[in-house]
Length: 154
Image 1 (cartoon, rainbow, N blue to C red):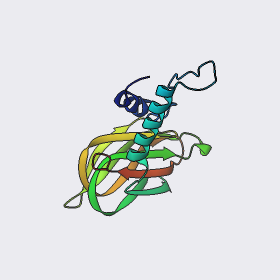
Image 2: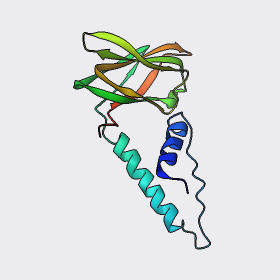
Image 3: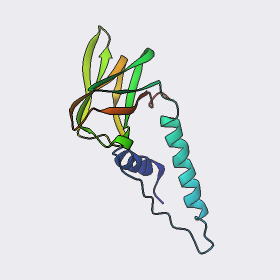
């Protein structure tokens, strides 16, 4: 089994990019995972919960722009976006922006698809609001969740 840091990176590059995480942990002849693999999987679960268990704020919405207002301005270093895929994957391009001190919107990141889940991580940034602007879609965007996190300070 991989080290925890490698598994976290695999999580970002799979689940965080609208894919499944396949660990390849195989049960032994007794039908159970080897104890070391079981402990590492539990450790990964705890780390994911630590990072993403308590968002600073979350919102859902429809349309080209969905805005998330933080309870108070603060440092953000991760944004998680999820589409309501019961209606299909509609977003083809997007930009995530943060409202910085001085009331100026600043581009944080951009991407080409969202799907079930997209995790965007970036250097900590002081913001009062976060918004997603869907710049290209095949139908009206339906954002199931837009959430902001401060993982590095958790």
